[in-house]
Amino acid sequence: MACTTPPPQVGTQWSVRTLAKHLKVSASIVHDVLSAEDIKPHRTEYWKTSYDPEFEPKMLEIVGLYLHPPEHAIVLSVDEKTSIQALDRTQPLLPLRPHQIERRSFEYKRNGTTSLLAALEVHSGKVTGECIVKNDSDTFIRFLRRLLRDHPDSELHVILDNGSSHRSRKTREWISRQKRLHLHYTPTHASWLNQIEIWFGMLSRRIIRRGVFRSKQELIEKIISFITHYNIEAHPFAWTYSGKPLAA
Image 1 (cartoon, rainbow, N blue to C red):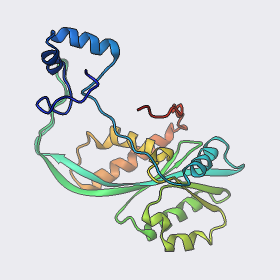
Image 2 (cartoon, rainbow, N blue to C red; image 1 turned 120 degrees about the vertical axis):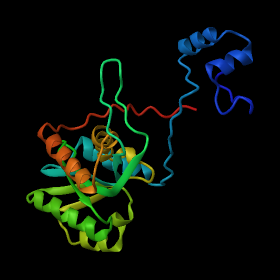
Image 3 (cartoon, one colour; image 1 turned 60 degrees about the vertical axis):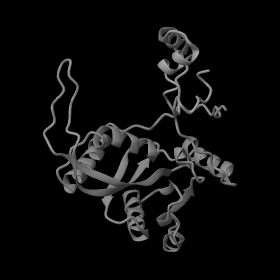
């Protein structure tokens, strides 16, 4: 019953109490059965299937770069994290104490936004990043020039998504003249193939999500400082994805 769609009067999902009432049993019995069968009606996850007709060759190309990169080449995972908000609280934080979690005011103040353009060096774990004002072809080309300067003696294989600045005519014309630069596009709706997304998640958890920023500049400085300190002990990511398909 817990795995069925509840009637309209119950709502969108079952709870322990609504199941108990519907089945005319005690809530403790429902709780014990749900726990034993590892059924969690209150939880949900999102997913999306890629219908890119070239999904498999694109995926294999990128995974091949991760597992067996070309000799003397550097593999870089690149993307933008856009619209990062500099949020300040209207009242001081109440700090963490024994038996008391950290508390913060419900109201906040927006102090502007920034976007981060970053590259993860896949086989060392080091990150290059800069906060940008506009996410356009000129900005992206400037960042690629920086990567070429940082690695003057290596072929660069750049993994990135299908963003407009990545595929614009201006970008493609410029890249066609760069002999050391090779772009590899992920399939549509397959951001999980781009390892920089893992690092963006770390940035959000450690700096942005619970951060308090009194200005846009303070947000930028804390992001750049995080990158600097992260690179001191950077190491490659080890994926734990087993390749098991989603079950219906």
